[in-house]
Length: 381
Image 1 (cartoon, rainbow, N blue to C red):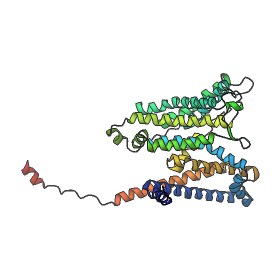
Image 2: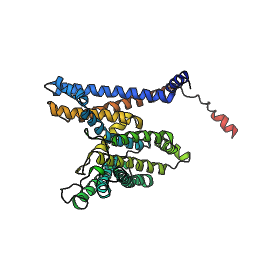
Image 3: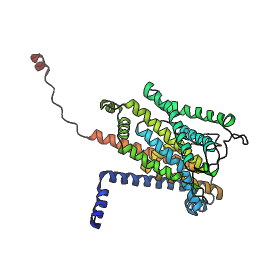
């Protein structure tokens, strides 16, 4: 293959409608993120007595050294998993909140199994197996609201939201009375290094879990847009009646979309726990599942764009934490920014919907045949 052929193939790739659409969506996402950042700067100007220093720390300190940069990657890791999980569910039209409980349950199961099964002779295989078991447990529990929706029509939002707190209190009971460390208080057993995922950078505490997170985004996109199951899932989410008339088993689609989403969240919880913690000590839900909805809104349910949005949100969180440590601006700034992001993307979606409806209303209607006079109908009868 000559150099000219390579150039032509490269240019041809960017002429595809699919590529153009992806680039447009990426550009829109970048613009919206930039607007969110500008809003954050305005809030800092109002809240800080030394806004110049606060803005400097917020914007540039996360990139000041390799440790802070790795903190961005670590902060974005759980957001990638929960973002992908939400994207899969939302494409099927399922507003399932068990992403939060699935992440929590996956972390707990992995932390309990790893100290019992880990061996110095298998430093990677056993932790990975524990993570898979945690993902399986999350998928099995996530099957409950999925089946209630597909079989009985129970609203998945309500049932999954309540299931989150059932899982929370059951896990807290198990940590306190069954699976806890006898030498600790309300914690699981200590995780030795061979019971955890290997570090990519031990000095910066960056685990190889970030590779799993990126792989989850890629595989999520492949599943949704390159497999027949993903196609059925997307068609069911857009028009369930049409999918049913085409012979698709919409009940099964509704079920497996939620089970897969819960499993992805559980896998992310296990990866995050065995990559970044030495024991399970969470006493509340970590809110990563709810943040996954923010990520999904930002990327319009495109798993391939999830890492970009997660890295941006991770960057904002690290910047907010450093700003709270070094200046007079509180760490709660990040929640203001997240709220602004939801408002901006919600407004964008509402504007697009309004324009689409207006354009549809202005389209010329097809002429209909004039109705026969009543006398002609009676004569024909």
